[in-house]
Each structure stands twice: as C-alpha cells, then as structure tokens.
Length: 554
Ligand SMILES: [Ca+2]
Ligand SMILES: [Ca+2]
Image (cartoon, rainbow, N blue to C red; front, side, top):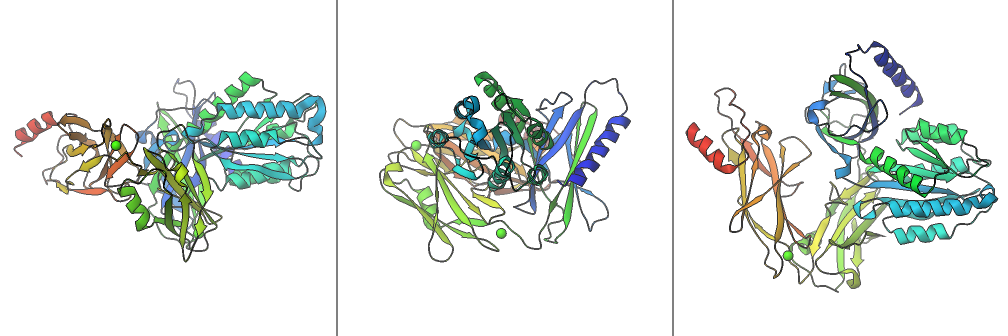
C-alpha cells in the first residue's frame, strides 16, 4: 500500500471511529488487508487480518460476515463479488520467515552476538517445519549475506547460525530490504524477524525506503532488540509501520511467546478468494474493499492490485510420464524422474521441486529442477529417497515476479503423491452424478478399497463447491455397507449454478487416491423445477432423504 493511501485510510478509519454510533456495545473490530495475490488472475486471493480493540485475532467468522467489492479505475462504481469464498489461512500453509541476525562489530559487546545466536537457535526449535514453516537465515554487517536460503530443514538453519561471528559495520536497513525482497518470492504467509541492537551506520537504503518497500510488498517486519546499548526507535518505527511488533531482549520463554504471537497473528488470517467480475487484462488498478460485519459491529479496509495487459504467472503442467507415475505404484530404492512442462509469457526464472517420504517425520527437501530441451524441467529423485509408503512432492516456478505451484492449491499440505511398493494407494470406483432435478441434498457414493495386507481405507471425503466458486468444502464419507462409502452434499450448497465435486480417500499409510480432482472436478447440473422455491431442509442422513423424496413423490 502507498503511504498516501495509508494516510487516507487512517483518516477514513478515524472518521469511522468518530461517527460510529454507540450501541452500548463495547469494543470494535479492525479489518486489515495484508496481502492481495493476483498471480492467478482473474482469480484473486485476499489475505485479511481481523482483530478486536485489544489487537487479539478474531477467529470463527464465516462467509456471511464478509462482503468484497472491486472497482477498476475505468468503472464508475464498485461491484460486489458474488463468487466470494472465505477460509482460514492456517488450512493452507505454515509461515515463511526470514530471520535476520546482526553480526556487526557492535554486537561483540557483552557477547550480544552469542545471545543473538542462542535466541535464534531457540526460536528455530519452536517452529513447525512439518506443518510448513519455512525459514531463511540472513546475516549482516556492512554486507548482507543470505547464509541459508529458505528451507524446511532445521539442521541446515542451525548450522548456518553456528557459522556467524561479529565483524564490521552495520547495514541494518539494507539487510531488511534484502529480506523483504527474498521473502517476496515465497508463497503464503510471510514475516521478517530481525535480531539486532538497532545500530545502523552504512546502509545505502534509508529507514523510509525500508518501510515503504515492506509496505508495498505487505511484509511485516518484527524487530527484537538485544543488549543494553540499544537504539530502539527505528526498530519500533519499522515494526509499527509494517503491522508487526517490537520486543526488547527476550528470554527463552519470551521467545516462545513471541513465536506464538507471530504465528497467531499471521496464521490467524482469513483467506478470501473470488473470481473478479472483470476478467480482462486491461492494465487497470483495481480497488478492493473488504467489509466485515460481526455482532452489529462493522469495519472495512481498502487496498489495490494492478492488472497487467497480459502478465501471467508461470504455468506448470506435469508430463504424461509423471502423471503415469502417480497412477501405478513404483519400486522402492529406484530413481524416479519427475518432469513438468513449465512456460511463462516472459521467462521462467527458476523451477524447484520439494519432496519427502509420505507420513514420515521428514520435512520437504528442495532442489532446483534442470531445464532440458524446450520447456521441460526435470529432477531425478535418487533411489535412496524412494521409500514406501510413498513420495509427497510439489513444484514451484517463478518468473521473478510471481510464484506458481503445482498442485495449485495447498501444495505443502496436499501434495502430489506417488505410491511406493509394497504399498498401493486405495482404489475408488464411482459413477459420477451428472444431474439432479431438485435442490435436495445430493448423495455421493463410492466403493473404496485398499488391497494391501495390513492396510485399510482410513478415511474418505467428498470435496464440493457451488458452480462458479473457487474454494471447496469437505464432508467426511461414512462407510455404510461392505466397501461402500457415502456422503451427502447439503442442500444449502445446491443452486442453479450446479455443484463441482471430487472424492479423495487415504490409506492408513497416508497415501491418497482421487476420483475427480480439484482442477478437474465432476460437475452436477441442477435442474430446478419451476414451482417456486422449495423449502430448505437440511438433512444429514441419506435414509431420511429417501423418505423426503418419497413424500415429494420422486
Ligand atoms: Ca510471467
Ligand atoms: Ca495402501
């Protein structure tokens, strides 16, 4: 967000505060757009943080509490986006954190550097790498060095911290600037955390540069001051201006509280997704307004994103060979080569693969993929890493501006999988439903089995969404008879736009099978009878349903 806009917004918020009538209610809500992701334009993602008057995150809001409108600078009035969906960021990723460590000469005093390294190492212990927390170590004196690029691997991070020793002058602002630039290339929720004494003397960038750059990239910069001779003012100012916070010389237990605060603040956000009503690459600025109403209180925030004339994120398509690997179980101990066709309207800057053994305690390992002929990128997973029950993997590609992932949604949490022998993925037999003639709940059934001895189908879910929407909701399938699993899509989701759905089932070893996918779901046409609205009955069990259908004479 630009500074001017922030000031305007501040005035706007202040006027809201002044003119909001008192209902006898205590407290207020504060809505803040932290990030707008338009890389999949016309699909837009808006990250929103909602807090109460004490700054505590408000959780538990749902679609009915939100309204989003968008207006381009060529449109005369804003339009409410009908395809809006609301979900929790925590369901999509961990937090990506750049840890900055000051190793300048001033950090020699009273072993400040030792304290900083200790603090950072304790902090590294607290992170949840298996849930997708991802960290880089950046250190700085007069120069800024990315000692350890972003990784899920704690041992690499600890090793990087151990190598640090104090040297010369301090380029604190340059270091923050570099961290913001590096973290902007990452996906999901992000935070920069700086461990420093705040003394600055050789940066090319000014404090103001750093603040406006972090604001533009929507990156919060948390600052942690160490030692006695400390210059706290710039640290407080940078943290406040980027919606983060400053803490002074924390002890080990304070660090834990700090991590919890940061995780709650960053992961407690809402993820709003919609397909813009205006899908043209028309080079306009789009103003996005998010309005939140809860308990009679209302608040809103405004931010913008730019639409290029034709400026798209890289496109990643797995090759048929790789798709085949995902269909048939592969041998343990044998190399597996993953290939994908990756293209961009300008240039693919780099492609990375992330992989780990399914349902193990491993974190993702990551490697650059090699570009072979034309647009094919490949990586050979060495046989030593190919272990039963399976391999989880996902791919990212960057054009220097946007980062795409494959799979597109929740790549870290719901990666692609290859079953590794002796394990096989479950088998799903399902006849897709093509049409329904009412707005009744829809029964989805499938025969789901796992043929491995000692293994079984642990769970199955139906993912569904209203036609035209982006996000799916899930319902658990229940085993009804033999190998038949059943779920009912509630009738409040059934509308004339139809329903998209797919089925997924997991064996007890964490390897999943799909019938339909999020990108290629089954579609049910809903043919509503022209007799006015039917009563909206929410029925959970299919038995009841059949009875209702009988009463209605179906
Ligand atoms: Ca591009
Ligand atoms: Ca199995």
